[in-house]
Image (cartoon, rainbow, N blue to C red):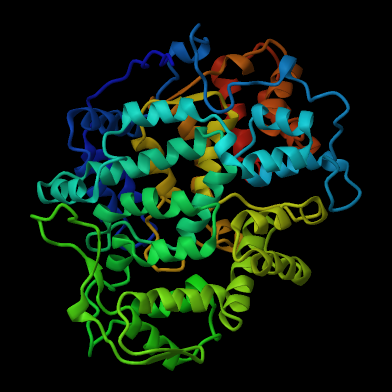
Length: 555
């Protein structure tokens, strides 16, 4: 794939400017500047230094958009949304509810399915959903192995050097002061969410990354979280929940984050046991203090190979001399004495498969999935049906998704406020873009409050509109920053540069909103655009205003 020409920019800024700008936006959040500083220090390779300098320069002053932005390169590869609607109109015969809907249910259900299963629709997804029907589109997304994602795979292979490295190699990099694997994880996360054809899979990767939250800068998690993302979350995101839980329990990142790597007989660490029961499976108030203590004993001896001379350095290791071999009892089930590593596996079986544990785990997961894909305060019948799918299939994640994404429920689901990461990616997918560098995205997404893997507590980023609605100013500023103030993400404005207001607004409506822009917001954009003739800056500002508006902020 050809890469568009790099836009001309200055390199007179320094990373210090970025940190000063960040400090002015701290809003009292402790430690955020320090965490970003560590990210910048990690990017010590010369090409990364240049990226940060470009970002710092763009933040230091307002810049006119380069002339290149006003013309489309002949070999423009675009982004995930490079397939614009033909002639900028919605498909025939697919009338949408728009602002005149009489009730809360949507008439354009294919569009609703695409909205809820992606990080922002593109006309590729919409065309498939309209042509094949929402049921066929959903099944295609559920059977991700059948989706050709070779364009993304090629970019990942060519742009990142650490994604496929062994844990041993990551540890040796860390010892040598090289944190390439840490910031490549962040960059690859943005690239995958914004451009992957396997959008529902990427949404589930985000879901499970929240569910099994690991803060990137707790102890050595910066070494192990890239491995956790590759070997735990991604292989099991659409499989059986028990397999995912078992892999997470053995993850060196989770063992580090929840202090399980040094849990010994006689002094078991209870952090992982508590979160395993409360946040990963049963939910609060569904277990006793004794259950938690017994689970902690079962996982003694689960640790990491720290021997730098070992070929399994950085991998899971069971240390038999650290294990408590006594009898344990969890949820009333006896775990006999004399066991070893299988004691922990037995706990996972009890939580996921037993008559006492499975219904609690099923309902806990069902409610979280309902909130993520349906909305807050989901109907109890929906939660019951998702939990029923878990119990009927022994925890098959795809079966649960088929329930929550069914037309019966999804057609009348309430609008959802995009979380910051979702908003960032949906903008990249709606406006034809090509990600050339990532520090700007990392910076502005952090300002909005949701940089991946930066949530410190074990409960994952909040999934409630009330939390994100209180931090609205950076969300409004994001689109103007992306469109006007940086050169890391190349943007093709040609589809919007029309000669009449009607054509400009039609392009914005179609590309950004799929033809569902509300009449009041369209009128507001028309008033801002003003009379012809239109210069490029005015059109670009109008696009930014549309992205900052209520319709684009929701899905």
